[in-house]
Length: 254
Image 1 (tube, rainbow, N blue to C red):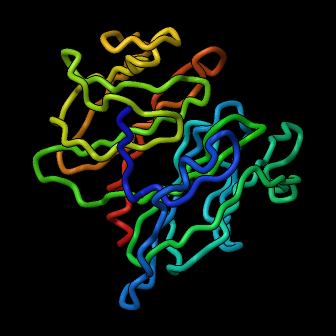
Image 2 (image 1 turned 30 degrees about the horizontal axis):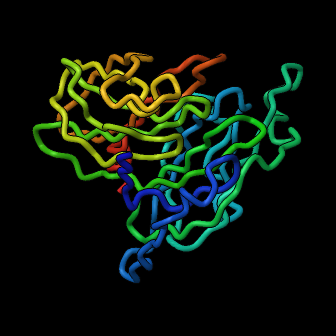
Image 3 (image 1 turned 60 degrees about the horizontal axis):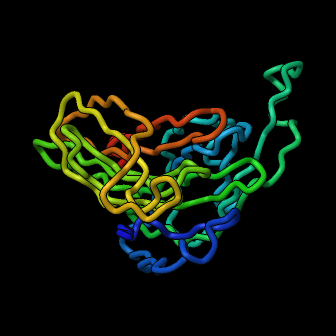
């Protein structure tokens, strides 16, 4: 089984992810010369309500719906309590009183956000066991290509294989909650297909066979960096879908 981790995965807590996702989470100590970080929220927890993100008690994102990505916000570097609050919508409530909606803690963790870093806090898994992942984003693109990494965020799906055009295997296997390295890809229109990883096909060891599940159409730009999350559910609703988040949006805040 190929496990391609990056130092981006700082911590994970809750749900069925367990200690397997906590290995290798050492974070460099923040530099004294750089005192700021940028943080955003990515909501890929199917059927979970809107989510607020608080970092060290400061609200960094509010009311982010499933499949949405918030803007980056700046804050001082350091070690923080990171808390996701679920905020169920009340159709009869006026917009002016949204802050009074009762919030409940959906997930929390602690992460050391090193100075100069850019981070995505990811809400994943199902509503009764929301998990928070903290990924370090890459805002250093290649001039003539797009950089793309892949995240398996479909909680009921087996390990997935990621294929490009003509069936070229990009990532042989990622389990739920795992993150690939960044892959250089040709800019323009492209298709990414996710399939069951060969060893997971039909629940049997079948090294030569994978089963296609979903295909995503992407329009990539040279000089940009992206993360493609495969979200949703394999056996229920919402169905599998792709959430493409652009990391280089953070450049304008630097």
